Length: 278
Image 1 (cartoon, rainbow, N blue to C red):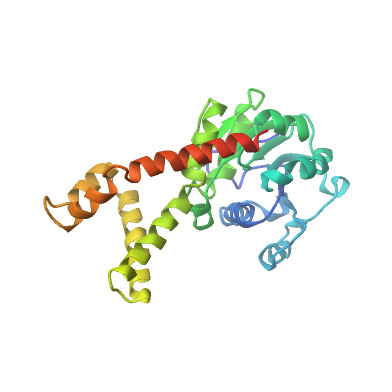
Image 2: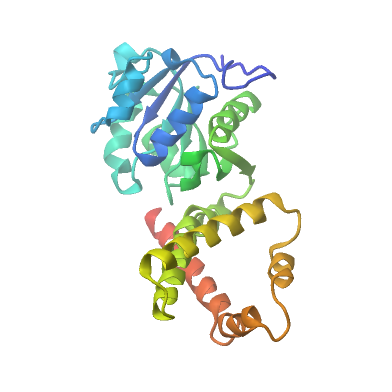
C-alpha cells in the first residue's frame, strides 16, 4: 500500500519506484527526488546508456538495470523514454507492473489508453518541461479513473520535485499543454538566439549581443515569475508612447506578427503531439 505523510511526501513514499529512462528529463526528476529526501534505496533505474551522474547515484543506493525478479514489487513506475521507443520499451517494462502499480508517464503524445495497454497498471499521464533540470519546471498531469487518491498524491509528489504541478481532468488538453509548456522553452531559447542575431545585425559585437540577449530574456523571465502583474501589464510598463520599445513592438505586434506566428507554432506542435499518439 502506498502511503504519503503530510510533512514531506517524498520522504514518506513507500515501496519501490522504478524509473525507466534516465536521460535529461528522467535524470532531472531523479535528482529532484533524491535532493528532496527520497530514500535512494527505494529507487531502481532502467537505462541502457548510463551516464556518470547516474552511476554516481548507484553508490548512494540506487539500483541500476534490475530485472523483474531482483526489483521486487514495484509500486510506482515512471516512464521517461522517448515516445517513439515506447512500444518496444513498454513490453519490457510490463513484467514489473501489477494491476496495483502506479504508472506515471512523461512521454509526449502517449495516451492513457496506450500506456494501460502496453504496460498495465493505473496510469497518470504528465507533461513536464526542461526547466525541471533547475527545479523551475511546470508539469501538467491527468489521471485515469482507476488512480486512487493516494496514488495521485504520490504522482504529485514525484512531479512536484522539479517544479510546479497543475492537474487537469480532460486528457484531450494534453496535446495543447505539450505545445505550450512542453515545447515552450525552445520558443524562449529561440527568442534569445534571434535577439542576439538582430543585435549583431544592428552593429553590436557578437559576444556582447549574445550576453545582452541571454541576460535580458533570463531577467525578464525572473521578473515575470516574481511579479503578480499580468504579462501584458509588464509589457506596457516598459513601453513609452512613441519610444524605442513602441517602435519595435509595432513590428512584432503588426500583421503578420508574433501573435500569428505563435498561434501557428502551437497549432503545429499540438498536431504533432496528436500524431505521436497514433
